Amino acid sequence: MLTTKTNLLAFDYGERRIGVAYAHASSRLAGPLTVLINNENIWNEILKLIETEEVGTIVVGLPRSLSGHDTDQTRSVRSFAATLKAKTKLTVVLQDEALTSRQAEAELRAKGKKFAQGDIDALAATYILEDYLKTLGNIHSMEKKA
Figure (cartoon, helix red, strand yellow):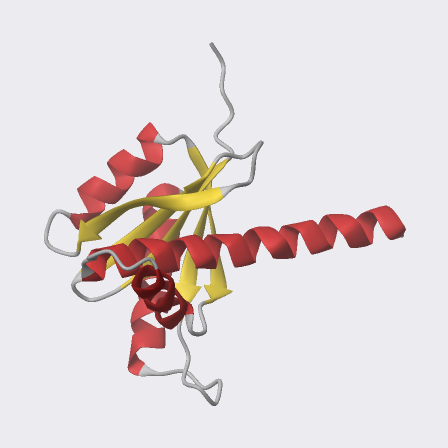
């Protein structure tokens, strides 16, 4: 069976953990997938995940300061995204991740259940992916109006 790799993954990159979210190309519904430990095995795990999930596009959350300027973490994420692109040859998109971790933590607290930091990371990746998918929807809406 011939498949086209059009599914999407999003990464909320951190020095210790990387939250991962997934969306199937046809449904475009994002959801948390997993949390990866950022250690010496990270690239093997990422490449395996990309292959398993038949990913065609990768979205990486881009952090900035509250004033919109680059930070040390911004530079780390840009480096991570460049390495992703080089290793996978896939489309890698940087998506603003402003306050996604705070939003994720607030949502998890509101549910009143125990959660780990990794749960926040995976949910933040979901918000990053949802924001990206919304921009695609806006692009398609503008194309239809033109």
